[in-house]
Length: 112
Image (cartoon, rainbow, N blue to C red; front, side, top):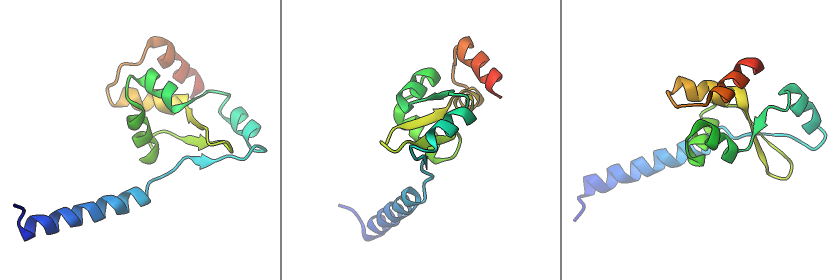
């Protein structure tokens, strides 16, 4: 049996979690007209969330968490596809202590 105090704490916790999820940073929307400029700006060095998860050796929910917290820049295309900056991804993964292959580390250094 749950006490009234425990129930109240649980409800407050759920309310705080809902408020945090509404305040999350989402990927910036990019129109079809802006997309070529966006690719030029980032030198075409972008990955999908699944590709980013593979490079960093983490799950896709972890990648979404990094995007939501603003650790990696992400853009959303008009069809809903998400693109993540490779340099941001590799730098943050290394900062957090994840293994990233030398190829991707070198790639991130070139894109700085």
